[in-house]
Image (cartoon, rainbow, N blue to C red; front, side):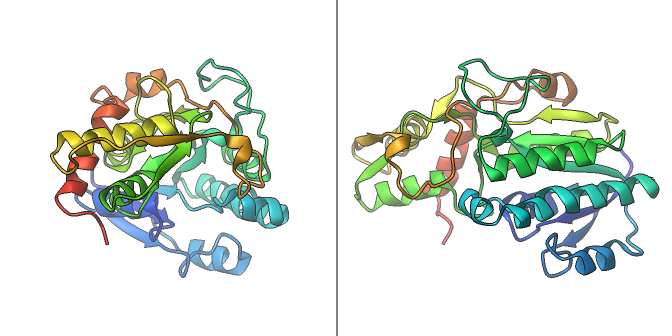
Length: 294
């Protein structure tokens, strides 16, 4: 397969760092951390794009804090919608393909049916609304791709799984929300999918997460401690106290309750069938057993 020049935003974040590290094996990666391209700053954006030479532009960077978006919806729209729209316009004008990353939070989560790429998006929060607006701004230019991901975890940056692992290892009390459900996405697998997509001229919207039975944060925590026990790291799997989403006072922005996405289209495109999230979590927990990130 032909080596490509791939520009990647947000390379200090979890997804951006994973992509920059993995894709560098087969492609010429152009990292665009916030210091090089700040989506909130029009001057920074124009400067970064001026003279940029790439075949593909990957945009995982975003303002992802739901509370920050709720507090400053104008900033959320600037970062998550206006800036991706400008990048998409520049890319279309320069023959560059754009792959923009979005979220399961564009859905209301008010039904227990997995939404596919054609399902109606009805975001509940300023974050979700800004991400949906960004999708539409990018897709205004045919040929670009929007990749919706959910509950991303991996070695690049601590996530919920890492928190559960460290707390269980220290013998601390475990608790997790039991009435919010989705599907995890392992950065190792996500990077493999992106490698395939770089050579596949698919556009529109694509759901990209590890398949399987939808799981709550509570169920995911239970799985993590079970894997820790089976790996010999714990004598027994400690109990995980179930919490209710409505009781989480720190969550000021509305969260959808069910956003496990249908990834059938992804499976029909990538070279290998995406593995279930249970297998991905097992592999990651085993890697943590060999030495969790600092």
